Image 1: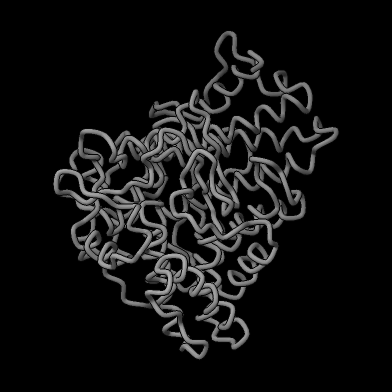
Image 2: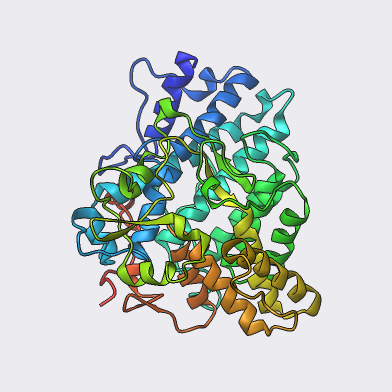
Length: 459
């Protein structure tokens, strides 16, 4: 990598979080640091900066999809046991996060580093002479993805208030240093959707290992599903599935494997020299001599493995009497951030909620595809005249079993609660203060008026 570019990468991202408690966004360039306007000279420089964002998504222990995001989401949900957890893990698991805690802070900082880098890219699009549409589309996709992950963890979900006027997260659309504010959640979702709609018009069908139009449509399906906007969730997941670009995988062992899965709609590839996905291995890996830190709760383990004919049992094992996952046992694997199974489950549940005959038939077939893959002929398929309630319930049950350990469960708990159902998980309601993380001290210190999340855990 160009040395000057590397310098600006460090400088640009240091503007977001310096760790100080005063004016931490107003950091003057140090000797030897190069402002972005001087470092970025051509389209290749722009592409290099954009590509570095994918490493921030997937890289080592403190990165986003490298593991911290999934770990925190799993700790807050209801699939893990917590009797062995201490420190930051114990605090998060017990839903009593504070403004301190390096684990949470590292996870918070990195999405905003990605956002800052893509803002620099977007501010220099005039340098893109041949591939400008793809560069702009990828940048907006990544900005939307990162803001979406942040608003799900640091704000109450869409639907928490009738007009979604409750506080969201800082929305950053410029690389200029700025103090943090918390516009309402409605603004966050509007901002995310606007970025994705723009990216949808810019990205190609096939973009190699980078975000394509199908990654954008799949993320739109996920966002609308989180909003309980079932019509849009159905339409976008349907577009992705019916594109024919992704193949329903018959082998559960390949979802997290070196060669990847044909189901991956947006994936992060492994680069072992960059230590990608290390945190998933560090916390979940169960094929060594020691017990992994993150263990499956006895009740969930019993439920998930209760049917000996369920082929997903390969995702579980016992180590010294503890139930653990095997999903992340490979030293090298690709990470499907969004995959076809998720889209089929989204389409099925949305169809059930819409209760339209034609859509219901499609959703029932989606569920039957998943049931047949998991159980073969030992579990009967849903009948073609199944009720919408049965379609919804079955889709939710299968989603839990399919996406265990992938960080999805927490978002579903909040989504279903926000839809009006009475959701209690591990003895706590979906909307208690402890289900939302506290902002790190560095963000709070940036503005004396920065509103904190309510404290009090879930007791």
